[in-house]
Length: 106
Image (cartoon, rainbow, N blue to C red):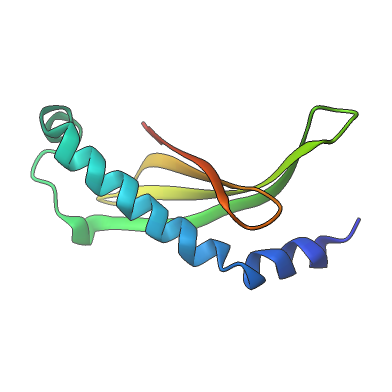
């Protein structure tokens, strides 16, 4: 299996940086659009207390065994006030374009 090709794809398409930027876009929109819920989840919110880590990068082969719909998924782990607070997934097609993203809070 050619792990180097996946790493090269991530670097070539700047997937780490784009995923971190995607997280902030999603999270800031959540704060604006769902302000009441956001306040319940993050009372006394301070952006400086958010820490982000690339949890994993994976190649997903979908429509098995036909493999006609595949993606690279970058998972960003979110800590808030030193506690695990959420997981953000950014899904890229094999051309490096964003297909979807999702934030799960814990």
